[in-house]
Each structure stands twice: as C-alpha cells, then as structure tokens.
Image 1 (cartoon, one colour):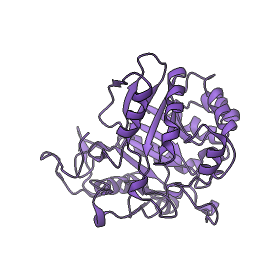
Image 2 (cartoon, rainbow, N blue to C red):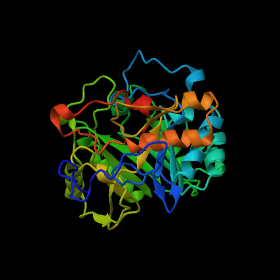
Image 3 (cartoon, one colour):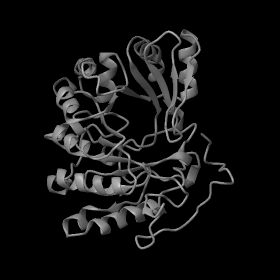
Image 4 (cartoon, rainbow, N blue to C red):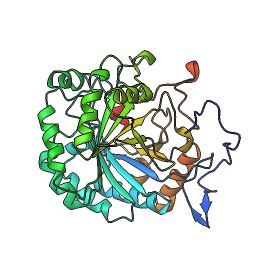
Length: 357
C-alpha cells in the first residue's frame, strides 16, 4: 500500500459525477468515486451512545446525545442498506457509539442478513457480549471486532474510564462457542507510553487463541482534540517488539482494500495485524463510506462534509432519489485524509463516537 502523499501517476481523478450522471459498471449504477475506487463497504452507526468513555473517543463527561427521534429506525437502515447493495455494497459493518446498546440489535442483524452481502459484521466494546453472542449468531452475524486496549484491570479503567475487563474477556470466551461468527478480531488502539507494555501479552493471546489481534495507530479523532503525533506508536514499532520476544512473523496475503497488514506465528493459532493510517496511509485503496446514526453519509473518517439521507427518507424520497444522493456523496469522496500534511489537515467535524467506526 503506497503513501498517498506521493500518488502513482495512474491514480488520478477520473470524473465528476452527479445524481443525474451516475457511475456505471456494465450498464448498472455503481458506487465509484471520482478516483475510480469501487465503494463496497458500508459502516452503519446504530447509536451514538456508549457505556464506556475511552480517552481517544469521547470526553469523560458532558456528551450531548442525539435525540432518539433523530436516529434512523430499523426500517430506514434496512432500506438504505438494500439500496446500497443495489449500488455495489458487499460488506456492512454495524457500529456505534456502542451498537449493543441499541435495543433489539439482533433483529436488525437478522434483517440485514437476508441481503446478498459478502460480510455482515459488528464492532463492539464487548461489554454485553456474554448475553448477546448467541442471539447475534442466530440472527446471522458473520464477523465481529471487539475493541480492547489492555489486558490489565487498572489500565482498562484508565483508558475506558469504566470498569469492565472481566465482562469483555467473558464475552470473548462466549463468542468462541459460536463458530459461525469468525474470525473474532480484537482491535487495540496503539498509543505511545501506554501500549508498549501490552504488546507481548496480546501477542501471547493471539498465539494461544484463534483471534486476530490488530493494532491500530492512534488517530486524531479524540473528542478533546488533544491528539499529538508524538503519541502515535507505529505498526512497524509494534511488530519489532513482538519479534524481539517471538520468532519472525509470517506475512499473510490480504485483499487490496484491506486496511490491515496481517501476520501469523509459525507456532500459534491466531494472527496479529497492523492498521497504520498515520505512518502508512492506505487511502488509495479505501472502499468505505459511513452512515451516522442520524442518517448522514460520511465518505471519510476525517470528513468535514456530510450528505443528508434522513430528511429525504422522511419526506417521501424514492429509492432512485436516495440512490442518487449516495452516488453524489461518493463522487465527492476525498482522495486522502491529509494527516501527514501539516496545515492542510482538517480534523473531522465529529468525534469518533459520533461518526461510527
């Protein structure tokens, strides 16, 4: 994956689209952005609420939650997902906030599982998985990402500002009973002067469990705006820490649109991966868009613009009109996030908890 600061000559803006001149592939409308990237991954936030207060995601107090009548209903989410599938969406991931706080979440999973998707997944903090793993599996969930930044109780509280490590670990154990949800991925936000002490323990966990543990570089999506580049612990640094204690990691082939550089252990069950949006941006192969809990389309985590779907949904827009809005939004998808470009970088217009992962 190449750094997008120096784009290859072939990576150029190919067109400017509108709802009246949609992208086509073999005569069928498709979500193709102005740089030729096929958008096939839709992240859907089902709530902005969370039972944790992670330091890189939201402030400890004072969050203003969305009014419940502004949040998309299951009927609205299902309709937009179906339209997305008709435009080429192949993967849907449910996010939050914390999505397991949305009442009757397995019902939504069951509805979406009937769509012709290649992948239906969930990102969660894992706190409620002990009781939700079975109904989610039975509803048709296929993949899951559990956010977990430490394996120590005191440090868990330091990061999440809540207690709950035992509940999360218990939820992971419960997930193992349902092999239809596979793989089980653990996302670790890597922060300098914190994560170094966790790396070996997570690597040991990946050796003895069939988990995919992914270290994600700390990004400027913190609600308090305190992100500093010096706090970024890079993927290559983490890999070096692991290989000091274990044999060299074995690379695993990944799809071109994958955000993770994957590796296995010569003598282990699981994998480790490195998602390096700061040190090794992967914008050139980005195939993702996001739908916020209140029905706004975001074409990049760091977008400052949003495209409203909720208002037309609730004022009688046709499927074709909603599809046109999605096509128009994708035609304006950003080339790259510009984290590495100094004054050119603009922080996202919402915090991570409000955007959806």
